[in-house]
Amino acid sequence: MANAKVLRKCNPLVFFCIIFFNFSLISTESPNPDSAALLQLKKSFKNSDILNTWKSGTEPCAKGKQWLGLVCHNGKVTGVHLGTLGLSGKIDVDALTKMPNLRSISVSDNSFEGPIPEINRLGSLKAVYLANNRFSGKIPADYFKGMGSLKKLWLSNNNFSGEIPLSLTQISSLMSIHLNDNHFSGKIPEFKQNNLVSLNISNNDLNGEIPSSLSKFNQSSFAGNKGLCGKQLGKKCEESVAGAGPSSSRKVSNNQSNSKIAFWLLSLCVLILGIMVFAILVMKRRQEDEHAFQNDNLEESMESAGWEGGKRDVELSVGSTQSRVSTQKGVTAQKTRSTNKSAKRRLGDLVVVNEKNGMFGLQDLMRANAEVLGNGTMGASSYKAMMPDGFSLVVKRIKEMNKVEKDRFDAEIRKMSAMSHPNILAPLAYHFRNEEKLLVSEFVPKGSLLYILHGDRGPTHAELNWPARLKIIKGIARGLDYLHTQYASSELPHGNLKSSNVLIDSNYEPLLADFGFNSMISDNQVPQLFAYKAPEISQGHQVSPKCDVYCLGIVILEIITGKFPTQYLNHGSGGVDVVEWVRNAVLEGREAEFLDPEIVDNSSAIGQMQRILQIGVACSESNPDQRLDIREATRRIEEI
Ligand SMILES: *[C@@H]1O[C@H](CO)[C@@H](O)[C@H](O)[C@H]1NC(C)=O
Ligand SMILES: *[C@@H]1O[C@H](CO)[C@@H](O)[C@H](O)[C@H]1NC(C)=O
Ligand SMILES: *[C@@H]1O[C@H](CO)[C@@H](O)[C@H](O)[C@H]1NC(C)=O
Image 1 (spheres, rainbow, N blue to C red):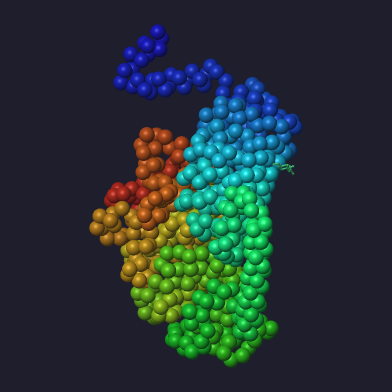
Image 2 (tube, rainbow, N blue to C red; image 1 turned 90 degrees about the vertical axis):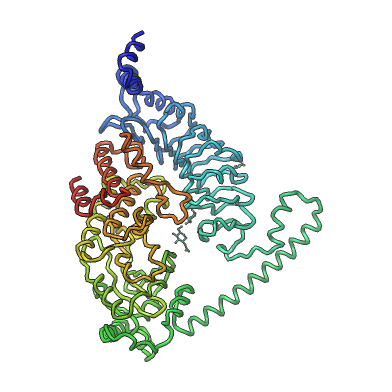
């Protein structure tokens, strides 16, 4: 009756009434349901003395007195993280099902054993960490069927066996799968997820060919599976080898002919291996003869960039004197190196525009240990060169940057290199050829923000917490503001702000890279710049500095939601349309639900997060007239 009265009284707001009424009932009269569930869970553990903060009559998410191992958001438990606590016994999944807000669970590095617990009954989990225990047995093929939100799965270092569950391939949200160091067998199923950024299935008993959908992962993800073949492992899948997989699992009865085939296959493998070893030895020898290039890819690219020939040392009028000087210095500083004439001449090709990391020449780069970092847009590829003096450089080779002549290019790079701001990564040197350019800059230790946010942080890395993220957002805004002052007359001061172009140093200070390219890259590549994704461009508007602000908005929403924005993809499948998603949430006052669960444990900062979220929305406003300008955006961010 009382309920009915209330309903009638506030007819226009029926919904709010019900919600408010129920909510206040729960929060005042019954104890937090999470608390009972957690106590039930604790009972199922052995050696749970360490959970002595888990006591009835106390609040699991009490400020300052939170129970050990919980992640809370708005007073509700969103994560149970019990890594490395020496626990064993059972995991009472029934108890966990009573926690409606639970999104992540970790029992890594404990001593649990037996079959995989039925955590698949928890359909809203985003992250499951069971690594480093003694779980064993097969996982049913359809085990993960109901786990449509799962992003991260860590089962490493257990004793699981049987095939990799097929249902894993059907979860489109999956970003990170770690099954290494178990006894999984059979073939690798086709993982077609776009979002998959991290995979480790090494050290199992898998066989057959590595599916082409996993070609972006390298040898390190697959090593230690004797029967596996594919280019990542440098082991060709001979047709007959590929055929051996299914036939062996089909239990062919004719054992004799099987062992004959096996014998011939083995001989073939030995032969192929022998040839490969021989070829490698010959190649190595040749490389040594040429005193150069420890990395094939770098060699190839540098060769095609013209580093082999010595004929271009006078190609550049501006800067060539300086680089000559660098030649001499470089050579005397490193007496062990060959000082033959051709080497000296080759050094002249690199124009060092900033001496803060000393002088170095092409030859130094070519002799450095090099590692391929990746390929990007605009026909660019990057290498990391580890110099003998202990510092590392990144060499970016860009093919599609052919709009301007040498003089103009030199002037632009010098302008960039003169930038002096803690959030700007200025180039140190360049090399100019008509068809392609090399840009050299410092190596930044933690890599790109994209990698940090969506790559693999592992279960216990809580480093990217809210203070770190706020610092990154502030740094990006400051860097962008600085560029807008330095390039005040440019229509696109940065032009390509996105998380892959924000590098993070060891103190979590962000550094903006790849700015100011708009005036230099080839016309057909201009639309590849991320600023051209601002919605007004597709409606026929000209680019403006407000396009950079749009990019800033996307990066802010990406940092705070932890989602990969669809805006970065060319054809829009995969990722999350962060702008639409968050805008609706803000309109409905539901911001808090969209914060990355990994930062919300610090509930005192929720207010700050919501304000940043609102700034992100105001920056990504599709109408440029309603969008914040960079001054205002920076001012509002600095206030937080
Ligand atoms: C691993 O699991 C198998 C059964 O699947 C069992 O026979 C074996 O003893 C287990 N090994 C360890 C180290 O627990
Ligand atoms: C393989 O990829 C991982 C990241 O996924 C990287 O850390 C590692 O350096 C790569 N290894 C090689 C040999 O390229
Ligand atoms: C995969 O796991 C193995 C063994 O733990 C490790 O050595 C390797 O670096 C891992 N590779 C990746 C890509 O995570």
